[in-house]
Image (cartoon, rainbow, N blue to C red; front, side, top):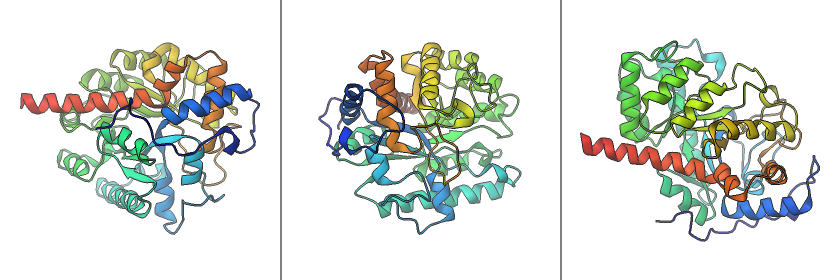
Length: 353
């Protein structure tokens, strides 16, 4: 199988192909960023395009459209090699019944799978960590399904096993009755079964105490697919240093979002959050989860309004003195590691059974 040492298939990205910069970056740093992304592309932890397309199913993502910030040309221009497609239901439906949440989630899984079938030359449904590198080497964008909402699991693990059979590889416990204020006995069962199946737990929006409990209970690494540093901006969706330290202890991964309300209104502010997460969670505990996939009106930091801005962010980090080896971990290596570790935990659980 392919791995990170294989020669990647070039997708033809060059600094000259990028849109005119909205923020100033040194030309040399931008060239280095583009070259690095050609080998270690971005594995982005969060994109809500599936939800957007579920509401407007006739949108063509092979061509750029101002109606949504994500499409295949801009993913390629940004050097995105893997994408986690969020399947969470809109926040307005948080009071919906468990059956309705399950129905909505299945609809979004169907939309995501339809997307993979519609664009087979660009998107590749990924089920394993090996698929990450295989897709990259074929010039395709590895596509992981998830997270799905933990609220769909009500006193039964059958839905979790069914999600796995459909290709889902990430579960978000936030809002689930078994992980609201503490991790209940059923919550521990969910963690064990997720570990056995090789499904990652995404702790985004979990209360700090619950997030720390989940990180400690899971034998596989956990992730936070879209967040920022609460010590720099006390937004309720941002992660505390306590949780970042727990992630470091658990070999987990915090993926920084590009959301003005959570990071600030500039590329430099996003880089500040990446610096902080790297300092607390460690170079092996920081990743990228932009939360693109929305329509017009969602405020984005200057220079990071769509996926094509990734090379400028990487150039900024290089100018700040990040070693290329640690940038490669940020963009690609850390995401592949947590996926491989989850699979290792799954195999070990199978042997114990």
